[in-house]
Amino acid sequence: MNSPLIIPASLAILLLSTLPAAAQGTPEPITDGQWGGMSLSNNNLGSELPVSFADRAAAPPVNNVCSGATVYELSPGQTVMMSGNNTGVVVTDPPGLMIVWEAFTLTACANVVIDYCVPGSVFTNHIKNLAVNCPDFLTGILLGANTACTVSFQDLAPGTYWIPVYAAAGITPQGPYTIAVTATTCTAPTAYCIPISTFGPNEGDYISWVQLGNLDMVSTFQVNKTYVDNTAYTTQLIPGQLYQISVISGAYNTDQVAAWIDYNDDFSFTPDEKLGEGTATSTDSLKVFTFTVPANAPVGNKRLRVRTANVQPGQPLPLDPCYNYSRCETEDYTVFITGTQPAEVDLDLRVFLQGPYVGSSMNDGLRAAGFVPTTEPYTGLGYAHTGGGGGETTTAAVLAVSGNSAVVDWVFVELRNANDPATVIATKSGLLLRDGKVVAGNGVSPLIFNIPAGNYHVAVRHRNHLGCMTDAPLQLDANTTTLDFTASTTECYGIDARASSGDVRMLWAGNTINDNNVKYTGGNNDRDPILARFGGSSPTGTASGYYREDVNMDGKVKYTGGGNDRDPILVTTGSGNPSSVRVEQLP
Image 1 (cartoon, rainbow, N blue to C red):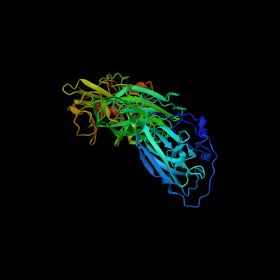
Image 2: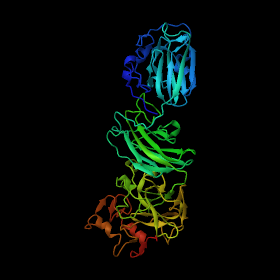
Image 3: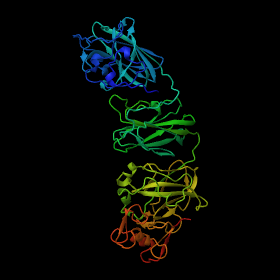
Image 4: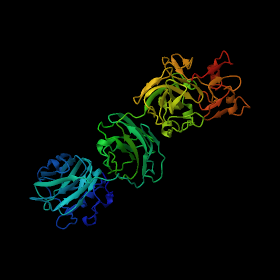
């Protein structure tokens, strides 16, 4: 459905002779007193007439207010005769006119014509407007194009509309009246609408993150860039399956966020194709919409539309997929509806790191200090990504989350061959939260690997801890599999592969060198790099930052004193024998 031309409210009192026919179907706010001198058409003169009022002694009709209107169902191809009786009508404030109300509910997009010249009920004057809300109809009206007898509106979306029927003595029918309302099918679009905007995203009304399946896009704010064509980015969806789409809005904390998929390829986004809508509650607000792909969705590429807008008075709410909001951004993507299971496995993983572990969770000192990078660090550290992994990113909004869901650091996750666990099939970098959950860059979703379902060993590694791996392969597929490396009951490959604290298990800390062991003394030990980090001349020095030598991950490298990073290495190797070596239990 195409978005109609916007008409500023200040121009809504234009004479008929100067109103472009294309200027139809757009809600506009009404200012105080504006109704009293606008939108009246004389079917003999075709011009505006002053309004006169007469006192009535009878009780006003029930539809003297919009909430009393009878609501008729109207579908394209139908005409509905709406009859009433305006005896006793009084001036209402707002709008300061003698009017009665009729209403209709459109079942589908339609072009609507209201006829005020039904035989036996001819209006000398009529109002050229349609209200989109009741009882607060002043918040939005539509200005139609009119002839001597009719008012017409193009491409009205499905929904309920209220008709203000003028009822002034001497120039409209008195007592019984009838109007005819006809709906015809909207003109089918042949291309997707491209919304425009006065301010666009410039005032903070933008999209910073979209994630659905394998589609994981961090957006960059672009001045004056109202529409972004991201259709080169895609993910696969299966009919009948349940999915979640995650969207992070921008810097304005009351924006509306919504998403649609055009399942039937008709170049429009209808209400039944909406995936969800929500209101931002903070800057960089995350909204997650759960939806099910229709079981009968046709196979092929489909357009995914994501919008955020700061809805001004008189503008459509819920969000319209095409409306030219004054402050907004729109991004389009592609989803491929497939009839077969995609090459995908989902993993809900949990793991603790010994270095930052305190009590029953981990500290988030690196995040609190602003040191956790928005792009995974493992590619730069020489870890070999494969199977589609590498380059994972997150946002400042995700890193701003505090509490149990706060980010601790990035981890490196591997899926390995079931028969030869030394062979890595696929990798992903994920965010490790304080409660041990490992999630995708949006901070909420499980890890998704673009490989076929099957049996795999799962290994998890960290830049200054020793990794571990499942002892037996797991059956993995698109139905999310849960794996908890913090549980003592989860069996791992090798001997003593994890550190213990009661029944809790965690990765061994202290691997400050990129190798497969932790050493306190001797060549290539992990203690000396701590001293070297801040020059090595004074053991009491410190260095703040994102460093492998920060074993306890509090954001500061220390060699001596409370909270130093040297002692955890001795704990890992065994405090009774400083010369012992802890070897990583990975094939």
